[in-house]
Amino acid sequence: MDLAPPVLRARLDALRSRGEIKRLGEAIDREPALAEAFRALALMDGIVLEPDVGGKRLVRALLQRADSAQVRKNPIRVDEAFTCLCCGAEVPLGGARVRDHCPRCLRSRHLDVVPGDRAAACGGLLDPIGFERGGEDIHILYRCRACDHRWRARAHPDDAVPLDFDPARLPACRG
Image 1: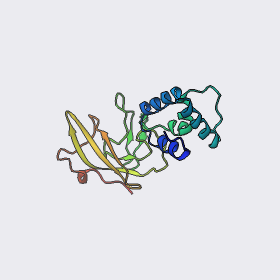
Image 2: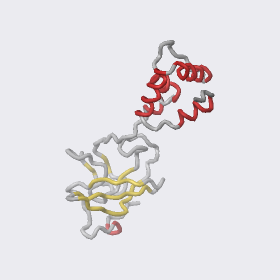
Image 3: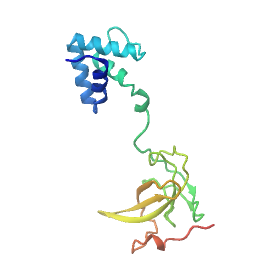
Image 4: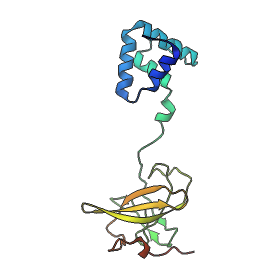
């Protein structure tokens, strides 16, 4: 087995799942030469490790994924009352379903990197561009005017969804 640093780095780069990380960690725990080679690689990268660190922790330290693992990738929905930027309607809380768009004009504000987390700085207007039926639910398809982000949201029972599903028949934005 080749234990040269470029080969070890390629092996690390090929890891795609937690299971693969675990299996490599177990192989490191079983093979002292492999463990020593990966420890030397960590030392070359300036990673300080405890002398008795296990193989899986060694691999995770070498991958340096700790910071990227802290970035949220799943939506956190925020239900808040708001004034619609498009039609000026006062929109109350959504209740059991988070209210993320205006029930009158169906428009929303693009506030997210991950839809729902309220973290992005885009702030563009999300325009409805179409509708989909999924069982008994209707989904509104959106496109952001500012960044062209695409988003899909479930319609509320009180939304003014046109019967013919024509976004052009929605109320126009004021101003």
